[in-house]
Image 1 (tube, rainbow, N blue to C red):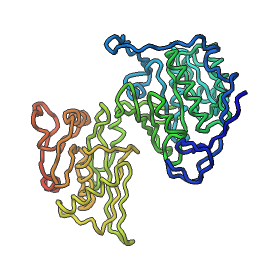
Image 2: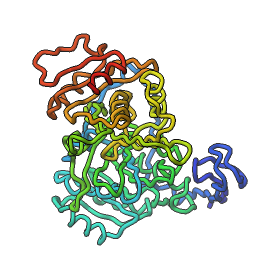
Image 3: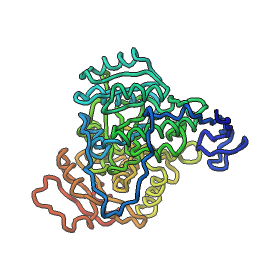
Image 4: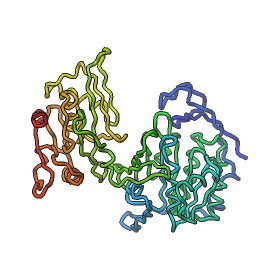
Length: 457
């Protein structure tokens, strides 16, 4: 038996110290260090294999002589998940899914397990019993006989069952509940999360079996555990949305096999998550024509064009300092656009409360929404409604100029498909743009004042 070694580890960032520290020098958080006993015994060295056998020494190979292997992907029934993963599940990949409690992470993974009819799936849960999982599965609808459920937290026992079942896909719910006998510390600690993830990563790479890990998040919204957890996995997906609203967004944070700008959109229903194939229709609410402060912006998320509804409210500040509140849009960029409207547009927001909201609970950071935000603010300021058949797609500069945005053809095509009559763009986007046969009237402008003069008549 090896001598036990005790170290103090920050539960926020994973930094270690030989003694207890009140304030972590790495993340500057207070009272986050806890003692963990690390003891690796010889009997606990077994991982997913019974015996490691002879150690294989890898030899360096000239990069020109490396054989290129074909990237095999498992195409699931879930097109939104396929899009977020970059086209499907890559063999041997390690995918981490994070999100708030109750957002639908377990439901999404169970739906994936139940719909994989031709693949053998092992769903390991350390938080729920097999009876609880069966209740959710009946609500979703059991469509396969190849889904196996295991309630276990010990990784050695999990790997023993894996050898018997030999699954094509492994789902762990959740990584913070697992513990390995190689580390003598509590489940969910930094050491346990790091060691368990390392064992699962070794299993995935050596057997080419895809592994999905469900992860908890902290109160700040980041994935719980050490930051090295996100570095170890191949893909990190963030499940976002308001639990009180029905729509959920699966956003790609990291992806070694595809783009990090893709997202999938779902609607939570009583029988599980429904894929939303045309998100523009749900992000644009049905409204009366005389409502003010509403403008439609054309944005791009990954390869998908979206039309987003921007809502603004401008009212007199009667309680001292004017408020600036933004939901789903960068607050600093909102303050910048308000300054541009004051300086270049002649509007006075200094004594006005300004509230901005992106409808549908989605968060967008693309500058192409600048013109839609400005139009929404001007509509609320003058109390003049903008037609619901008008869309905007342009960036606004500090000089009040209308700047060009990329992929303008996709934005125009999306607006045309949804029945919009006009779209305001930058005149610098018209170069090389084919205007023939367009059902939507394209209006190019170079200055912010010109847009407002045209809108207000």
